[in-house]
Image 1 (cartoon, each protein chain N blue to C red):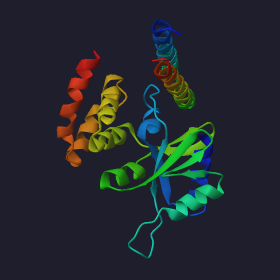
Image 2 (image 1 turned 90 degrees about the vertical axis):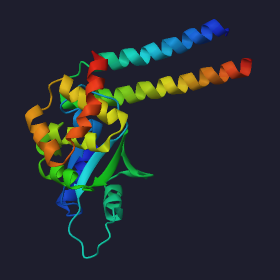
Image 3 (image 1 turned 180 degrees about the vertical axis):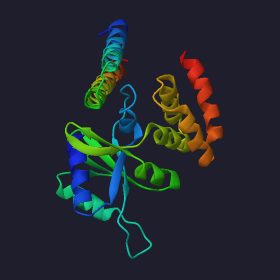
Length: 171
Length: 62
């Protein structure tokens, strides 16, 4: 994990990506009890390019030069496969911009806010995503007022209905 | 190995993975939690591999 973050920081320093933030289950584990996941999700802003097409090839090449091993859509650093995702929706773009600056084992990095992690999970909408939101609420790891405002802005409030039975089921 | 032993072995594997998960939930810092996720992945992989072998043995015996 530390090697993933060091490689990502090096990509920012070299201008390959403008910035990044950690999301997904590893990002959520900053706030919640550890939960199983097999990869690290890094959401990146790419530098402005002349063309319309977005290519992650330069990112994968730069990560390889940092010692990563490309395996399908991942770049593996030690035991951690790193997945690179772009700001594919306005919500994700806002999540990258609003990410918290933190450190991991002495390495500076950025992690999505709890509210953005929940909103993205609700937007993604798989079973495990809804369960993660239930965990955030049950563990009081998210500011509910701020989350509700965010969900209203991105028209995701109705997705919370799916989370309620999960919370009841866990009790 | 008879069917009862094979079933017990599968149960033991599942319980050991479950125990690893339960213990790891006590981790506090982000670094500890990430380390615990890595341990959970390793435990899951071991359990999956062992289960696959146990099932293969079972299939060979029948």
